[in-house]
Image (cartoon, one colour):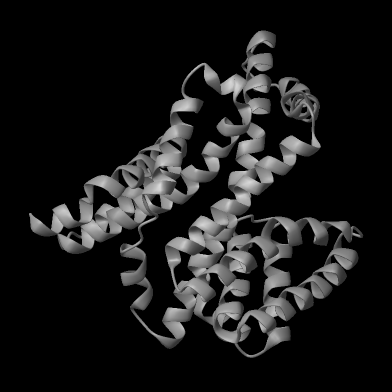
Length: 303
């Protein structure tokens, strides 16, 4: 099925636009499909070039506006998806196309997430309070449900914690969508035109010491009492965790490949990633940061 989506998208601009628009519409019911939609844009841009990629994005917007109007009567949703999904993955793909570096493209996606954090802090004077106002009605509705087990004080603390994290999580979501869409598009490109190339490229991913040092500093800020005073920096951490979490995945894939371990190791890792996402992302990101100095892949090869 996934190969069929890629084959259909490669038939032309409007075929790619229709595939992206329909996947984005279906993602409203099944959110992971949004990554496939972003993957189509990445594939079209990588294969057809930046100008045609921009035309695919424009054509997708036209098709999606029609779909949103017919199904929901809400055309403004197209603008939201354009800004949060299609444009970020398009920009990240341009970075890959011009630099020929997967690491540069991932850092570009991270840069977009950091821009989202900065803009939100500039446009909304009191972000935590603003998010609290958005979340409180939802939490009040949840607390009225029969199965809700938290008391009033616990619900209030949960609301405060969510309000403090939302800016970073939203920015990380934009970055993550761009990164995953880019990886899917790159994998499709390799599958269609250069089988096996993507796996080797992914396993060699290395984001560099400057980005690793920035992430380490953000970790220190976020895990100390300075987080409240330096909220802008703390909100940047989830974005960088996305990038170095992907690097951590690349390291695990490389070590499993170098040591010729069974795929069960990778399956176990992804199962744990689903079941324990916050802890696993932090572990993988820490692995990715430390790798800039310890080069775990080289050590595995030597041993």
